[in-house]
Length: 177
Image (tube, rainbow, N blue to C red; front, side):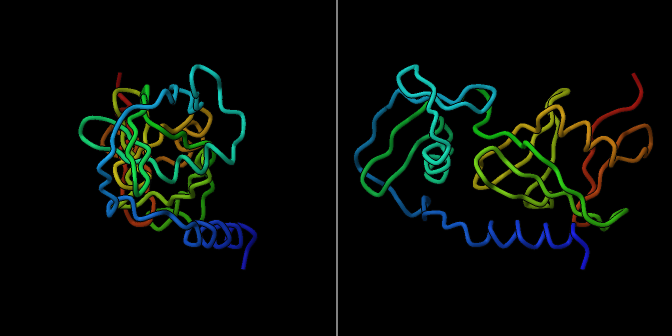
């Protein structure tokens, strides 16, 4: 087994072992707002002060839920609305295993998630900005440096740049200006 296969297996095992609470089962009666904001760069703030403890940010990310009217931190007893400027997460790294249509693109997020782009976790573009579906309506913006690496994995198809992952094709946009 190669080093990249070992890395993929290790990261995917970590993701499978990550214990996410059953947020969809929690429907608390108490709801309100809390002064927490996630900026466009994935930084979390409480009452205007940046949260420095990554472990706390990672914990909050596990209880984050997206609903039609916004984002909430949810526990069994309360649901508190927060502000998210764009999307809650950033895709900060990319590892590639395989080649061609059978390659796998493994993204790491700023909150410790590891996601293989696939049908359930598509890569998509909004204008010229790339995004990745993480889980349960939560999205990550793919950082510029990671997007450049993603582009290197692409291939031209009918004037578009396409990348493959886990048997799925994702269109990164037109190559014609």
